[in-house]
Image (cartoon, rainbow, N blue to C red; front, side, top):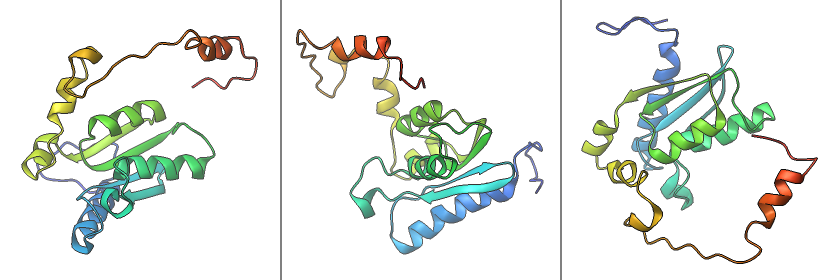
Length: 166
């Protein structure tokens, strides 16, 4: 492990964070996407890594963390990241944070904060602010459309004997 002046020694291996930051920098240098990189590690080995490819793929969900989570889950043959650590070049945005909670890694390490991202033009504070609002109070127009059969698929799920809980 690399000890950094002013930072307490953690269980994390700083070389994995360096890899995430390198992915972000290469993305900037090649113009492939935003300045974000992510690495997923299990048992001290990298099982997946990715850089942001939102603009390269025209996919607003292709953040580095999301792409790395998808790759890691494929590699593990699981929809959860049990025993894994995620190293990301920046504090996760609300979407990536949600994906991380669903994936259930052991720990997440990040380099820059959301304030650093905002200074670089990636300000998602408004999304964090919107989350606690009721749907009708959000700036994104949201309307509930109910149908008589709307609950049937949830009822079928609860009654199903073949469901995989997650």
